Length: 212
Image 1 (cartoon, one colour):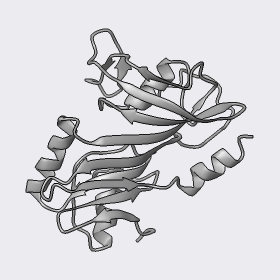
Image 2 (spheres, rainbow, N blue to C red):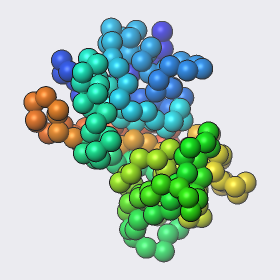
Image 3 (cartoon, rainbow, N blue to C red):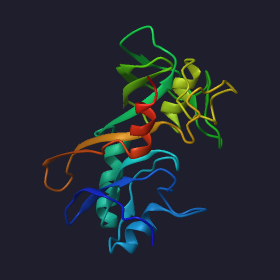
């Protein structure tokens, strides 16, 4: 049994877990979040997923009925998803939005004129000598959207190997520097607002501390 998964919010219908980097969101090749939570006596169903390397808040359901309701929140964009990211280089503005269309029909997503409309809003949190911290809001939710949009804009995330186009990464970080920071939504059964925040994990805190 591995380290316990922190629970950011829970009631009898759903929970939000703080997934560590290196853990799959759903069953696959390797250890996964559902199995880890099962070891803690928490039987849950997936609603959405994060890449294996990405840490942070993951929403899960406790019944099939609520699973469908929560998945509808994602489809209808009725849920707010905010990420923390560290990208290489320095932006020209304090905030902005990427609108590159993404074709995510294949195993590796790509920016393409035939892709689906995709929107990523970003705001600078802090600038460092070689990289910049961002608050990132997903307006749409395409495969690898944040990673792909930042790389296409010429500011690949620290630790990015899938979309970095071979550019040097001075941080030499061992995983992509992306964290699912906040989730906010209206509870589909109670109607109450639910808002959670996953603190930055130790590896990202250590990365930031050595940037300047």
